[in-house]
Image (cartoon, rainbow, N blue to C red; front, side, top):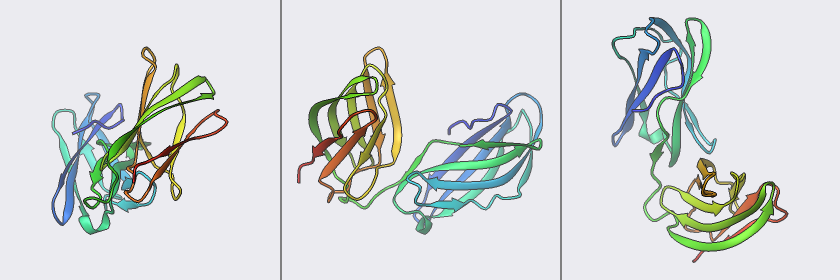
Length: 213
């Protein structure tokens, strides 16, 4: 379970995958010790590349939420409606009449077919001058559910990953100012994609990474 983003009401999400559906519940509790009324205006699950958004069927649901007991709001998503990808819940709510948007839970994965994605790593060792100085790309690591680009830079670098056919949606980006090491995590590469383009803001040219066939 993971925490939502409202100061007045805690929103968590519990999900379980079954062969025919993803079943879950939003778990609500007053976070400030005061009862609140929560009205769902819109509740969706978004595929993080922007390709798909599915309604959870909670529109117009109104709940009284107390500070001492969890309130469970169940939902179900047919598995047939979920293409391979990373997904995140998003809820537009009214808390005591005041609109807020919350994102309960972490992103969850609907796996790609076995052997369809690229695996392995490539040592890059290429550097460019960018907005905040030199950015050195160290390594590209490919896994079945993500690709990770590790780099060195005195500041967090703004990067875009792309193949010949598409831009890879970003999943996470971490940078440690003390060590200068950063990691950008994005959607995985397909096995048929043999070249990754890394565009870095402020750099004159992108870095092209050729992947093993």
